[in-house]
Image (cartoon, rainbow over all chains, first blue to last red; front, side):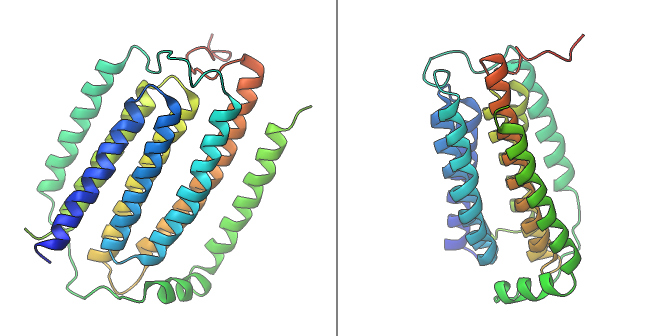
Length: 164
Length: 103
């Protein structure tokens, strides 16, 4: 687990964090959406490194394929705002940086001195089969509830966005 | 140097802080929704990392991550519908102009 996997992790982490910073700092909102795609792809790569292939596929399908397209649709529909070089940040940038850096430093300090109860078992490789089995047996009820939540959100979005 | 749980958790906290920064400083409502997506992804990295390193035999963390992705999709749908409605009524989506409920 030394050498190449570590290098891949650092490259992916740099992609994720770098394009994440671009998402929150660029002026053109459309470029932000494109960098969001890059971030989400990087997170999918992190999932593959964590031997969660099914989740990586779901990430690409749902986040990159659906949510980002939805965002770009919304940007297009609210056009004449995104191409103008208007200011995209409010006047709290300095305060925001201070708050975020404080939060990050304290979080990392706490993480550094926490002793996790790690398990020595090797991770199972067949994650798709295991997830499917668990979703249909032990987690069947949450699975059904979440489908109802999705249906409700769908109807709610239609009701909210439709013209009178 | 071996990449362990701490590396993933620190990566996730950095991504979460970037998302918080976006939520705090952006004026555009769609950009705020994008920052929230960043925060969702940070949380998911945490779930999957703990699933691999703490409970490798089961898939609890990954199943939670699937639920989080589903709820994020629902959130994005409803959020963008609200953004479109705001755009129609206010002729703009800068959140500092939307102070209808502020006294």
